[in-house]
Image 1: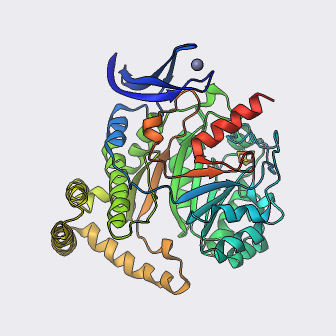
Image 2: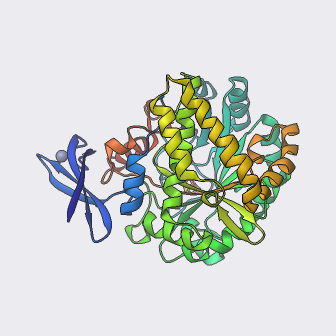
Length: 437
Ligand code: SF4
Ligand SMILES: [Zn+2]
């Protein structure tokens, strides 16, 4: 056992903030909290892979507050999944009213969540209100209602900016197990409708041990046939709400599988996450009020499809060197000469020279120009030639590392107590409330 860090966590019994240590054992990372009253509490760390943990720990994030908010607009759902972080349909809380959305005005991106947000009677009005408040509405949905074309048309017309669609499997038996229903046909219809209206869509796959991980290559291949799908996420079960411990697959296993599928290395996830966090910080030099968009709870890899292969962004750009130089710029943020030097390096070394020496880069440039057609209908997310492969982590009361979530990039808000807090704390709090009923 090797102790590698000190942090703070919450006592799973009395909820007090307690000191904790992070240690490595048998190639995995653990967190051990010490409550004076309730003793030692040990759990696997949310980033249980030592390389990912060390990489994520070292990443610096935009110092501004979170720019994003997850809003629970209902606790009801038209499904009753075996795995549900929100424990939907069990506990209702206060009714979310249209006016409640105005409390989120300081956040530029609003994820409408729940329960199932499309079951809220005022969902279109909520979206329109966000648009009129100059906020970006994003729907976090199981997609059941999106199988109806006219529903998607209305969402698009109301001004919905993008969708996070839950899709775990294309197999009826796995769908039955995870979601308690065969949803494959519905989900495929939803995907078709979202593509028809050019709504940028990220797909979330909740990985259930012994079920869908082995099929993820097939699932992603099918998903990437849709041009509006720019992000696919494989997410371990969030161990709050409804879940069974035996269904949990740790993020280290999920990342290993994705590395095999896409020819990536763990380092690609760390460097790409560091890159997007650095870019986020970089823009904050010019806009002091810019909030944080990227954090340490979602690791990312960027890939580009070249013929029948996926190419990591690290094979197109020298990401480690870009990150190193970006850090120098950010450590000297008052000296504009560093910004100038950085841009010179980017333009000459990474763009011009790359154009002649790297065939993948030429293909990226070509695809970028082809995608510029999306400018005309303001579908900016569709312009990128790259696709994100992401793996997220969601702490529960047993393994929340308070140092790690301090730079949270996704707050949450609901009508339970109208408080704003990091999304993981919000759902931990909700979990406690329900368990104490
Ligand atoms: S996981 Fe999502 S779709 Fe399933 S019951 Fe919970 S809120 Fe509904
Ligand atoms: Zn305690």
